[in-house]
Structures are given as C-alpha cells and as structure tokens.
Amino acid sequence: MNKLDKRKAILEAAVELIGAKGYTHTSMQQIADSVGISKGSLYSFFPSKEDLIISIYEHYQQLVFERAFVIGLDGDLPPYERFAKQFQVQFEGILEYKSYMKMHMRGETAQSSEKLESMGHRMRGRLFSWLERNLIDLYGENISPYKWDLMWMTQSIYTSYTGLMISSESNLSPKELGQHIVRQIDILANDFLSGNSRPLLDDDMMRPFSVGMDREGAFMSFEKREEAWKAIYERVNTLEEEKQYNLEVTNRISEESRKSNPDELVMRGLFQLLKENQKLKTAAEALEEQLL
Image (cartoon, rainbow, N blue to C red; front, side, top):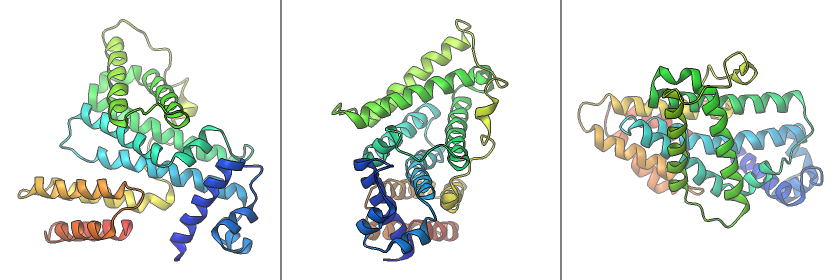
C-alpha cells in the first residue's frame, strides 16, 4: 500500500469508527489497529487527533464538492440545468459517503479551536462562492442585492434535505431533489426581482461569512486536481473539430471518477482517446496523473 492509499485507508477507518463510537470514544490506537499500522505510523500522517478530524472533513467535503465543480466546467449545459445537475451530483456523493455524512451531521468533532474554525470558515465561503456564481449565471448582476438572502436560504434547504437523506429511508432521488431545489430558488429569486420581497441581509451584515469567497481554491491536497480538470475543459472548449466528441469523452471520465471504485482500465482507455488529439494531450496527461 503506497502512502496515498494508506492515508485514504486511515481516513475511511476513522470515519467508520467515529461514526459508530463517537469522536471522544474513539482513540488513535483503535484507528491504527483498524488499519493494521502502529500508532507511531498513524501520527506520522496526522500529528494529532484534531488534525485527523480536520483532514476527514476536508477529504470528504472535497470529494462531494469536486463533483459540482467539474459539472460547472461543462459550458454546453444551460445555466439552470447545470445548477440542478451540480446539486444532483453532490447528493449522489452524500449518499455514497453516508458514514462520513452521519458523523458530520451528528457534530462529531473536536472541541472548537482556531484550526477548526478556519476550516469551517473556508468550507462555508466555498459553498457561498459557488452559489453566488450560479445565481449570477442565472439572473445576471441584478440578483446581487438579494444574493445573501438567497444563499442563506439555499444553505438551509440544502442542509435540511441532506439530513433527511442520510437519516431515513426516504429514498429521495438526487436528480429530482436537485431539480426541486433549483425550482425553489427560482421562485424565491423571481419574487425578489419582481419587487414582492425585500432583502434582509446585505454585504456589511454578512461580511464575517464572505471571507474566502474571492477564490475558488480547493483544500490544498486537491488544488492540482481542480486545476487539471479546469485545464482539460478549457482545452476541449477551444477545439474547432471534434469538440462534442471530446467533450463527451471528458464527461465520461468525470462520471467514472465519481464512482467509489472507478474502473482504472476504463479510465485509462478514455484518457487514451483524449491523448490522440495533440491539442489535448498535455492537459489529458496532467489530469490522468492526478486521478490515477
């Protein structure tokens, strides 16, 4: 098992144990035993239990959010449809990482600290940044005076449905749920734009929540992956010939990479198709290196 695989195994084992026993009742020794490594080896990856829990949050939140990030790069999807699909793939990820989400929704974490507050701030800023971009894509700059109310209400709706999805046998469809949420956002947005409602929130009031919204950056360990995704979609969209074909291949790579156990042979075959085009070869190789 290489270093990256071992790190992932530690995170997965920790999620299962903390989800079952709770944060305070799960020891680093138990996590090390579950992975089959020494406690010293575990500490070489994560210097403290707090660092481990932060890494768990960053790892799984990024896996969920990266799905939406990649869908957002598909310029051929109309904004409304793209927004709904971004919600859909996040809910699919939430179902896939149910153990983590249960741990997260239960609030299983270390006591509040500067590190944890900083991480939470960045996660929230990233969510709001993504929502803001989609609102402007849908409604233009006219939506800006109402963005905070819309983002705050959307966050609440998103969180409520997430809790329902992971805590019950509701069998909610991620696709239908994504479409449903965007319909509700549309109703709220048009109510503001028509002058029927006035916003309660503004930039000054929400300044504490806006830190970090000026960058799209992923958590550090994923930044190169997102840069590689962005580069390949940008290159595909500049093609004059076979653009649609290569876009379909890239989207197929995106779909396969979202699986809990992507088929490496399928992925490598798809990357080979992209690399046959000299204009895509470098970008395809960079993404292939990040994913495989």
